Length: 179
Figure 1 (cartoon, rainbow, N blue to C red):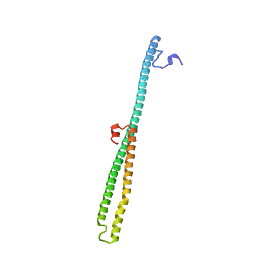
Figure 2 (cartoon, rainbow, N blue to C red; figure 1 turned 90 degrees about the vertical axis):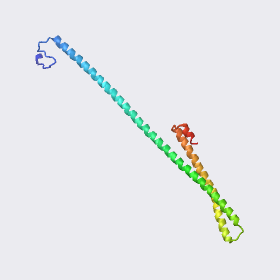
Figure 3 (cartoon, helix red, strand yellow; figure 1 turned 120 degrees about the vertical axis):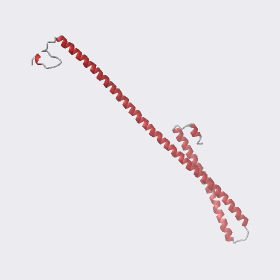
Figure 4 (tube, rainbow, N blue to C red; figure 1 turned 180 degrees about the horizontal axis):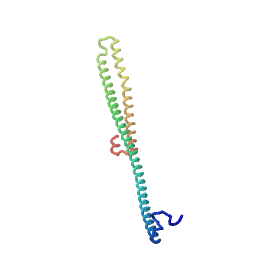
């Protein structure tokens, strides 16, 4: 192939343009390519930076979502502890009322029977009434121990709530209100 047969549009050796001008054109074209390459590298660099920033943002978003889920779980657990506390407080209050009622009922029944003791009536009637009073009297220690059990459950639950609150950074005034 002859030099004149080359059909490259950038370099046309068959034309009447001097070689120096061709070299200048090539040099200018090289500068344009260098500028285009630099621009492409800058775009690629910005794209890389944008990709890194996007990845960091996604990581922070995932971290935030995980923390939000953990916070919700803590709130849910705290609400459950509060609900359980209310149930235990109610049971303790009812237990104290029941224990007090048993003691009062025993006192009234025994005083009432004492008023009739030795009076008219069969021995079996007095025996039956005395047995009923004795059954009530037997329940008093049970009722008292049941109330103590409920008090212990309440105290243990409060300790659990305080420990949970300290572990998860609840405000000190909230923890102080549990005492």
